[in-house]
Amino acid sequence: MMSSWPAWAVLIVNGGPILLGFMSFAYALYLRRHLDAMMEALKNSRCINIWGPGLRNQGWFGGFLLVTKITGVVIMPKASIRIGELNPVDIENFPPYLKRLLQIDAVILVGGAVWLVIACFLVKFD
Image (cartoon, rainbow, N blue to C red; front, top):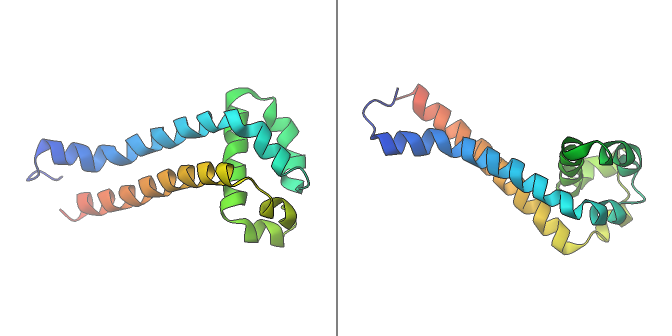
């Protein structure tokens, strides 16, 4: 298993996705500070009216799940609009600074997933 690689390279290749996963988790917990503004911006959307009140009062984990749900519907809104979970007017009027913060969270998460797949292939085929 990567025996010909230097120890620092193995640590970076295999530990990087884990570090990015923790960073994504911590950043999503940070985004809970903006949860009220996000919920207010999506107040006409069915997904927030259903999930919001229940998850908002469930502590840090409920807030984390709600931020993750909002990130998904804001970053990829077409499917949610099509099934009626998201109001198209809400997505048009969503504050740009919040959308940018959610995009950063999505990039960290996807980057870690891609890095993990590459690391798995490097370990398997070395």
